[in-house]
Image (cartoon, rainbow, N blue to C red; front, side, top):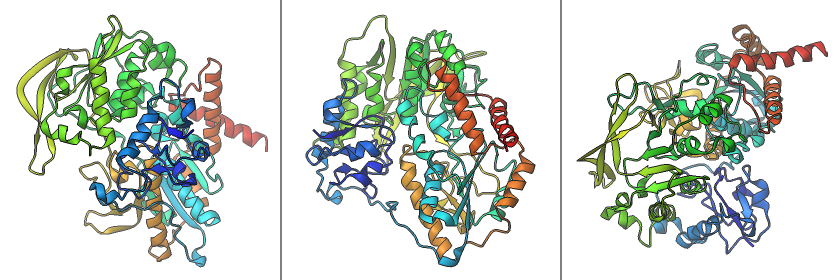
Length: 576
């Protein structure tokens, strides 16, 4: 019985590395790897050894005979992928684009006389942790890594961005807990640019890797989006996940309809959270204040608006399928929205990408079923764009324009407004049209995509010349694209570049050592939290959760988290 990859797939490709018969695709180096929504196992080649399931950091791989009704469809999804892309096929035969990326397996050698190598990593999310793992794995005892994050807790968007009902996805952090604590020192609650400067980091390290992601969100650029009741997805997601910066955000859920602009995975996450029975969320790590607000929510309908058609929707099939399994919630699609243009139909012939075909099939299935009267519902709207958020003191409605798909001068499909308009009444508008990086003091301006200008992770100055010793990885390197596991191979590529430069003698030695850095951090930020402090916070959150049958109850106050960490430090000192 073959194994099957299901929804929680994080794309870090650990499973690929352990498969003895090489039957998992796409893999690092394949043209589709950077854009795939998940990985797939060839049922005809799988030998049922279970090595991939044992290695999977998010428990996404199960034997086919253990699939539940909720994920049973993934057996066919895996098989369909290999109908389109047979295991022995040549990717170029399908017109796939060139792909120039490292597979993460090159171990650049360093000269024996290099001595201790000191690297700073700014950020403590997935991309930062993968970079730290790559550095310590390749350089072993020769490395000292200092990891900084402005928040009092690590894990970045895994903690503050992944939806609370996706606990399996969050389990990827278990892989990060094994990082070499002697080689890697953690400095949480330390903001680079405020407490320490870029120049000071460079003076204490051979190199600095910026991996602090994309904390901003894109704006609609339409009248009324600053009205009370109109929020960015970044803020809303951070609110229900207990991010300290957003714990006190005022979210009014007293209206019956919410409107989400954008139809990526984050938009579907938000829609799902808004209509899921709070009693089900009570078993997750959702923030206490959000759970309480949802218990009193009046929202019964969430409208998700995408500017293009179902074939071009930004969400992935696993997230779309998951909507159909929310208890008591109907998924509504207007069949008129599924009338496809000629170009989209061409994408759905025998040569179409299976994921694109499946997106349309699932939407058609939702459109064909009979609505459940009286239930909450999520309405998926396509080919529409907002033009204005209406209201006096707060949001009262949103105007939208209907679009049609046309080809631009490059042959790409674009959403073009028509003369058909519509007004949707609502008291809550959430824009979910993408994350964006924030400018970093001491570094060049970000590109239009919100990334640091770079070549394979080597950061470029404003003059286009490489900045010695400055690197980037994750969303700050490539823009807000790819899942958690994508960061593993992105980080490997960056570490390859750093190691090559180090071996070539291009990185001057730092002026100060680890002890000097520790003293500087202590002076500038006495409230900094180290590994022991984070472990104290982690243990306390888990204990608080266990008392009420939840995986954890998060501290949403930085001051509270710091107090727990400092109490642990004082106790350790007293026991010496």
